[in-house]
Image 1 (cartoon, one colour):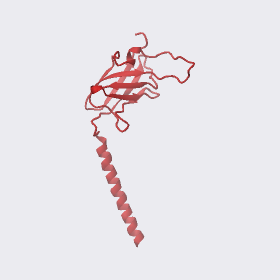
Image 2 (cartoon, helix red, strand yellow):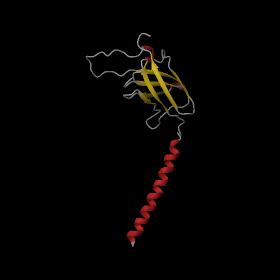
Image 3 (tube, one colour):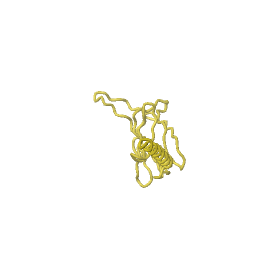
Image 4 (cartoon, one colour):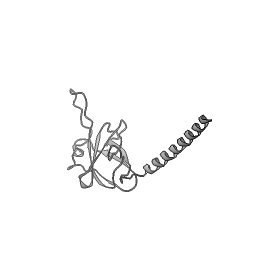
Length: 143
C-alpha cells in the first residue's frame, strides 16, 4: 500500500514539476532583458555565403554585440551568453572575414575593407521592438 501512495505522490510531483517548468519556459519566451531576436545572412555581392565571418554590432552607449556566420552565411546575434538578440536601437555593423588556419596560404579577401572598421563601415541596422531578419550583401574588394 505504501508503494502505491509513493507512486501517486511521485506522479503528482512530476506533473507539478512539468507545469512549473512549462510556466517558466513560457515566461522565458519574452525577453526580460529587453533584447529582440536578430538573425540573418551575410553574403558577397555575388550571393556566395561569407562562411565563418565575425559580425560586430556597435550600439548605443558604446555597447558591442557579436555574431558568427555558419557554413551557409547565417548568423544570430547574442547580447550575452544567456541572451539572444539586440536591444532596440541603431547599430553600425563591422564584418571580419574568417582567418585561414594554414599559415602558408594567403586567402584573397572576398569583401571590401570598408566593412572591417567601425569608422568606415557603411552598414547600419535599425532594430525595432519586433524580431528582425537582416540580409547583408557586401561589395567585393576594390569597389
